Length: 488
Image (cartoon, rainbow, N blue to C red; front, side, top):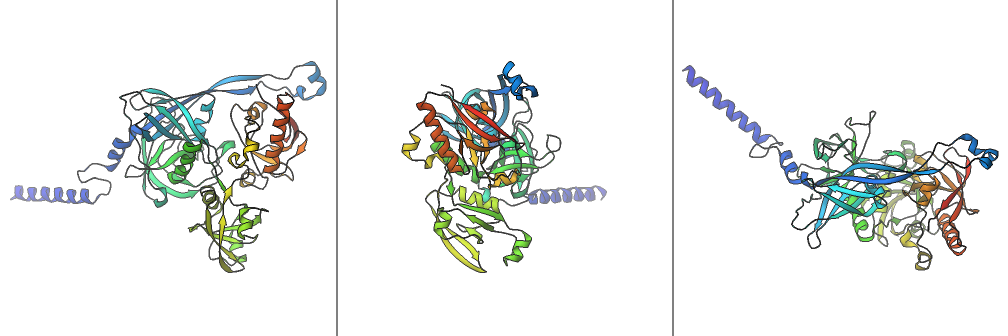
């Protein structure tokens, strides 16, 4: 009797265990975790990226060199070349079997020095390939590189998902190469902690367009460029940054949504760079006070603080004081979302815009144009004048970057990014500086800077010179002259 009762209890426990397993969303019908299947299917698509390059550094500067008397007797400190090696992650997202080219998605900050240096990619089978840069985009921190496989070599391709359908609380799987060699293709598991994060600072070159997925899946230095996956094994983001007090993971990581990356990658592969649309307003965040002042229903939307003359916004009927509620059918929650909606739209596309003006909702239709300082928007005559590039990207002084960096000036343009090993980089120009003049010509807008620099390059070539003079405010708001030297 006791034996029969024991057998009955054992069978009951087995039955309850089976029911629990069947109802466990983290177990497959055969009892295997779906995370295991994701890792098995996708892990070998993840690669390790090593970039070797050189950077120009100045020897320690003696303050006496700033005095004209001492400068006469002593030469200026010399610029030296220093080797730099950086490591990161990436993943194969497309393979062209006809020419055996594998395209790899990663971060701009991982691959950016690869144009002047050497990029090596280590595959899952430890085979090493030399890669080339297809395109870089500092404004989103997305990059594409490619390798050519040897004959008979195979490659795993990571499927791309849809980040627009993500929900907070979904499972998130990160795969990458943290810290150093020997920890390649480390798998970590967490959840989607939040969506639409922005204002994340990544040093001096923080991406302008931010709409990050936040996750608590462990991301550490070296994971940059690796995939963030959903439980179906689809890439939903590119791991790019962490918030940390120690330099390591504390459960706050950020990934670029794959839908944003897809749009950028499409241009990078087709053109080598991203051509962005432009609407021509100064957007302002909606605050609780503005909700009351403009009789809004919620803290959402974008207030039009300024409309640029002759811009698509002006031509489409937007006015200062309008509140943009939707663009192209998508709700505008904040300035970051608005900026991405415009930048990822197609140039020449006419987009419907829902606004609130004087408590009345109105619909406008605005035809987007190419960004004014976009090289693709320059006329053929201008673009044929010279192939020289300064390596400087600038923005208006009322831009979001200027506000984020807490920089203001009545004159000039803000240096937003500098290309490595460019004339600007060699001159010591840095993001956050303000360019006031180019060869003595004042520049107070992006267009003025572009035109003045083009004239200076043309004059330099005609006179067989190699330098262009800039008058700049440094990061301490001190005026200095700097010289761009163009090597022959």
